[in-house]
Amino acid sequence: MAGNTVISTKLPVSKSFSIIILLAMSVFKNYLLQKTSITENEYSKITENLITRKVSKGEMLLRQDEICSEVYFVESGLLRSYTIDHAGKEHIMQFAPDEWWIGDRNSFYFNEPSLFFIDTIEDSELMVLNRKFFDTANLIPSFSDFHTKVLHNHIRMLQIRLNMLVAASAEERYLDFIERYPNLTLRVPQWMIASYLGITPESLSRVRKELARRNFRPHS
Amino acid sequence: MAGNTVISTKLPVSKSFSIIILLAMSVFKNYLLQKTSITENEYSKITENLITRKVSKGEMLLRQDEICSEVYFVESGLLRSYTIDHAGKEHIMQFAPDEWWIGDRNSFYFNEPSLFFIDTIEDSELMVLNRKFFDTANLIPSFSDFHTKVLHNHIRMLQIRLNMLVAASAEERYLDFIERYPNLTLRVPQWMIASYLGITPESLSRVRKELARRNFRPHS
DNA sequence: GGAACTTCTTGATATGTGGTAAGAATCAGG
DNA sequence: CCTGATTCTTACCACATATCAAGAAGTTCC
Image (cartoon, rainbow over all chains, first blue to last red; front, side, top):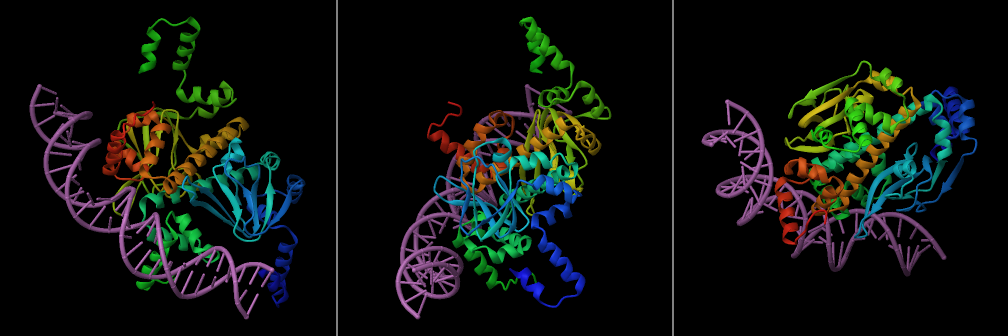
């Protein structure tokens, strides 16, 4: 991966040092220690029975109507969750690149059949979080607070998307997407972006053509 | 209200007794004692500085770009939250009838400018919940757990709506709405339901006409 | 390196929902 | 109870996006 290449080039000592440290611990550990004030000890304790899982592109991790018994923290790679409607069409609910969480929170929390499918768009490494992890970790106030924050972030994302869907045109939604997720724009096939935006791939292609005609350049 | 009328009719002693108790305490107290395992003492403590607020139909409680510093628990009445797009059109995000919560959770939690407006559709009585209330109440594990549950419910509602918007036609969304919220269907003006569904009032009128033509009867 | 598949584009046409406008029905307030 | 305001309906036309179909470009894999 990119990180390894960086190591082998000459860097100021302090910087390469910190990168080594970062590689030495798991992405999840680094993430949690940074976002919360839990100690290394506490981290070891709550994660002692956890496993990371390598999944290759296209693997399915959750199907509609199954109970979601694991939430994933993406250490590397890219996942998506999506529904399939009665006409057999997919509708992407969420993308989850590095350092994002993915899972059907309702299914996980309420033990209900899941509304959606989850699979991988790229080869990925996941930290697999089960109910026991959340039960234990939530006893630590710092984690619990952070978890509440994650839930609020999720609500925000959903609200913004809902509002875009009812208030904005396909073109506006696309422009919003590439501004909000510039890296996803490059990593994700166009038809998936279309699905996320709630339009067909053909329509997105036309939107892009029209933007090109008007000489639109992203990030300029 | 309906409850008072019931009292004056003859009921088995135990039932009328419980109704009197219920009327004697605030709706919010009854709700919390029922949904959580907090004690009366704890309830008194966390609510000692709270006020209830009577608001008449049409009053605005939050405007776009303001910081949402209060979350409301609806004791009676009906509220809505909505955005206004660049063309000046309203898009209803949520209805909040009796025993629902309403507020901009992100604005409240992250201290950000709110995305939406909140006003009353009917004369209402609200329990006004401020940050201090949540800070104190969340120290009680039973409340904190329940609050997490409320957040998950909110996420579920948003996800289902998002999915309906991208996966279902206007007619399907309307049928889903009247099944999911039969009482709202009667209390809320049709143009607001249209707004909630993401269509124009004219379109909803046509959807209903078409359903009538096909002899559709709700709840049959 | 070529075959098979997937993705993206483009054109022609269809469909669902929107916009405008007008009238009917219903509601609210003095 | 009457008057004005709001809500709902209907008709006609417009427009955004969907659908279908075909071909081009790009990717994957043996």
